[in-house]
Structures are given as C-alpha cells and as structure tokens.
View 1 (spheres, rainbow, N blue to C red):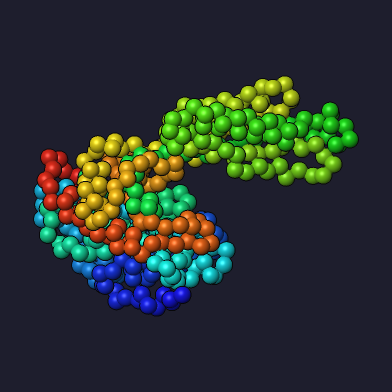
View 2: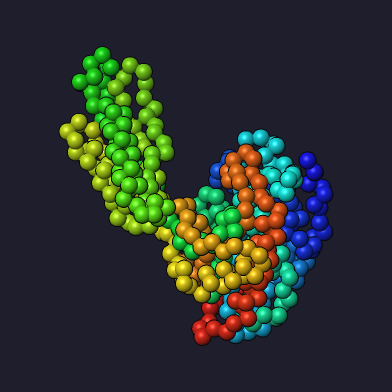
Length: 393
C-alpha cells in the first residue's frame, strides 16, 4: 500500500488528489460530536492560506468561537451569474488512529474525511483555482464551512450573509446529481408513569411498557409508509433511535424517554408521528406522554428541469461522466441554501464507508468531479442575469 507521502503537493499545486490528502491529514473532528476534538480552526487556516496563494479574495468568519468558515472568491468582470461551491471542513470521529491515517491503494484514498467531504472541497478549490479573477462575468465563490456534521451552524451563518445565483453542495453522491432530498425531524417523547415494587406491578404504571407500545406503533407506521410509497425513496421513514429509562432493578419504571427520527418531505408526517405518541398516552394505562419536535430541517426541492440541473448534467457529460439525476433519503446543507432563495444541488465524488472506520474515495472520481465543477463554473458564470444578488463583503 502506497504511503500518503507519494501525494504531497506544494501549497498551490493544481491537483484535487494531492489537496484531498493535505486536507484529510489535518484533524478536524467536530468538537460537538467528540468532546475535546480538534475542530475546524487548523484546517480552515490551511484552506485560507492555500486560497491566498492561488489568487482568491479570502474572508474568514467565525460561525461560533473557534469554528471558522472560509469564503474564497474569484471575482467576475461583472454582469454574469454567480455560483457558490459549499464543502464542509469538519469530520466525524474515529474509533482508532488508523482511521485518521491517510493511505492509498487500488485507485482509492483511505482515511477519515477523504470522502466526507474533504475530497469534494478539494475538487471545488482546484476547479476555482483554474479560473483567473475577472476571466468570467460572474463571481465564483467557494465556501469551506464548519459544523455540517452536527448542527450546520457554518452554513446557517453563510446563507445569512452571502448569496449567489446557484449553489453546489459537495457531498459524496457517486457523481450523481441530487436536486431533491428529504428533510428530517427529531422528536423527543417522555413517558411518565408511577413507581412501585416489581412484586406488585399493578400499583405502578410502567413507563417502559408504554414506550414499548409506542416503539411498535412507530414501526408499524413506518411499514405502512413504505408499502404506500412509490417510489419508496421519496416516501417518509421513521424509527426509534434511542430508548432510555435509567430505572432501578426491582422497581417499576416511572419514566422512559424515546428519541424518534423522521425523514420526510412534508410536515404532515411530523403530525402523524406525534399523533401516534399521543394515542399511547390516551390508552388508559395511567402513563402520561409529553412529545415535542426538538430539531427539524426542511427538504430540498429543486425541479429536474431547473437550469442549474441541466448545467451540471452538461458539465458532467462533457467530462466523460454518465449523468444520473435522482433524489436522496438524507439531508444536506443544500436545503439551507434553497430555503434562503439560492437554488442548489448536491454533487460529489464516488466512495464508500461514510462515517465508517474504513472511509475511501475514488481517485478517478476526484479528477472527474474537479473537471466537472470547472466546466460548470465556466458555463454558468459566463452567462448574464437580469437581477442582482448582493454578496456581503
């Protein structure tokens, strides 16, 4: 197995593979996921310096203390459509040091972040670096954001202060183009019963038993949705991801908490899940249920006929790729851009092992991705627009 040193590059080298290695070798595990983790500061500083060396206009803004976004711009000559590439700086954690080590074998890079999503970010940076300031009419913006893996505070701050005529979010898609994906909701349900000795269970009200009935009802609702969904990839899904009682042995549990995760495109599904939980509380078992949505995100919904989708399809085909336009069951920061008025699609390289110990990205797909983004930028930003988008500065 070749060692990462074979891919070391100078700071301005025009190579998405070398840049992926450099980015992935910098620990940027999200501290909101892992206590004491490195966070994005070091990798953000690297990206800022790389961009300055490549002739970008560079802005660094903290999304939260010690959690910077880097915004790098190749300004256009004026009058053209602007385009924004968004890739995140943070990664999830790792179970061992081996996961963090970047290696190469059989046409792939291995290591935490090479796929999710430092590879995609490297492609965006390299694509933009190949374009000179003023060469195109519109601005080309690359945003390297913090905290995508937890609460997306980086992109929330980004969309509040920067805008563009279109955006591409660099998540791993196997080079598929994704203009639609689900939103999600996290629902917290607390079951409150009454404690008693387990030898006299009728004197108590078992919160765990009530929660178990809720789990079965939620599983049945999910099965019903799957049966009714055509295609199933676009239908809602729901599951219980955590159960916690914290009770004692020989005591009927008086409290139990469920965390329910919902993937959907409509608010009606949220109400159905909450209705299922409320029904458990009305079942006459003397257990009260308190359920609420604690976190939710809207879906992404750009039509297949949108000019941005056509432009990405054309750019990918021009660089030898096979254009697949599809929807996704997961959520991405693209929905935040879309909600802020910027049409967005998700696009990125091929790979395997997302959030697993053995994460990898295809080297060939990195090159195809970078070339596609460059072609897209040259086509999109060369065209004029009838309206202006104000970029903060």
